[in-house]
Amino acid sequence: MSVFARPTFSAAGYAAFRPAYPASLFRTVLAYHRAPSASGTLLDLGCGHGLIARALSPEFGRVVAIEPSGGMVKQASKLTDDPKITFRQASSEDLSFVPDASVDLVVAGQASHWFDYTKAWPELARVVRSGGSLAFWGYKDNILLGFPEVNQILEDACYGEDEVVPGMESMAAYWEKPGRDILRDSLRAVVPPPSDWTDIQRMVFEPDRKTSSVAPENEDRAWLQKRLKLGEFEGYLRTFSAFSGWREAHPASKSRADGGRGDVVDVVFDKMIEAVPAWKAKGEAWREVEVDAVWGTVIILAKRAQYIQREVQLRDFVEAPSQMLENWCWTPSVLTSLSSHYETGEKIPDDLVEKLMSTKHVNSALFNLRQLHFGIFDMTIHTPKTHEEVKNLKLSELYNNLRSEIAGLKGPEAKGEKGGNGQATFGHLIGGYDAGYYGYLYSEVYSTDMFHSVFKADPMNGKEGRRYRHTVLEKGGSRDEMVSLEEFLGRKPSTAAFYKELGIPI
Image (cartoon, rainbow, N blue to C red):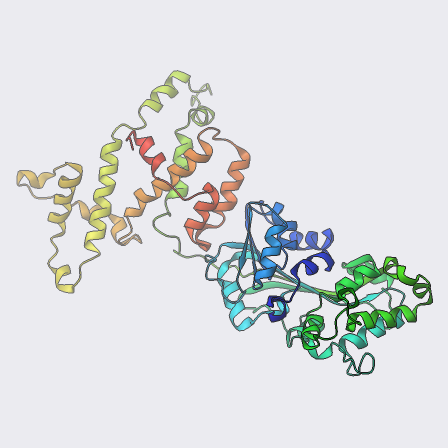
């Protein structure tokens, strides 16, 4: 997209004259995506002046919009103050700033023909979560309905080999390749790898260029149409990358608006006006004439392939979902709704609930010291530097000494008796944790933070419950758990709630 990145390119003109995408297009994309909530992340590739980012922002919790052109990024930033949208100058081939499996929907409007897919496909497979969606679309070579002679003049000026008028070449040589050829071929070269993408759909529409019309049976597929004035159409032609290239190659041929004798767009409109008597009769007011334009279009949709998750969730987080349930069980209103007399069905009395609640932290100090003991013992026996160190480990002695040192508890060995082989009953040591048992206590920090921050005031809030389900539980280990945590909390996690729950001042 080198033309759009050049200082001579007008980002403001691009924003003013390019066609807007209709609501029907976004409905098609969102219906395919089927987002469970509006808390997901949208990645907009080649965002231009931010049209797509602004339109889809209400459907997502976060929008990351990237664009190689610095001028476009500045223009996009001026057009919105939406705090959910982040604009960034970057390319689709390097998404190193996007975490793994953090994107729910990736879109590219009128940009996917520029990408280097040897780099873009691996990056997209990395950042889009399992089950996430891709939607690429583009438009090309519009026609003015009912004016075949005008459309032929435009075709010749854009792609013809002959001069537009003697001494003035067409724009054909100034289209950037192979991007333009890929777009004109309805993005057939853009094929999501089946190894990473499933349910691939392609919707292509072409107007009848010979008759300059749209067949009745195709009207519902012609999603990009616009009624515009000829003056607006003139401005649209000046947003073509080929026109920008032509203008740089012919600096002496200035437009009449800039005081020159006329550039290629001026000459093309001279010929178009001459071809339609009704337009010519308008004289200098020809720019006010309204016409109907329709574009050839293509939409590509795909789903990120699902995969079977096996032991991929970090041990730092793996216990958090079950520990979250424990928080609800220690909530008075939940206890009341869950409990009743086994014979009479009578609800548990309030005073009994209060008594139960008062026992919540009985032996909490001992419990947490015990967890520290387990975690440190587990880490110690899994981190010897040599095989010789492993052979020399005195497991029972190490286990008992750590327990005594950390938790203040002594076993039979303190009296000189045999026994005290507590590690032999510690199945987690070889049952999958393997130097990760510390995560049990670490997970509780996260679960307490989530519950106290979101559910403490209203434990049965259905809206927040659904958000927790979609943001944390459904994602599971398909993406970095810290991404899920920060998205759910709206910030980085904190230990404050954990300490507060234990009555430890910080």
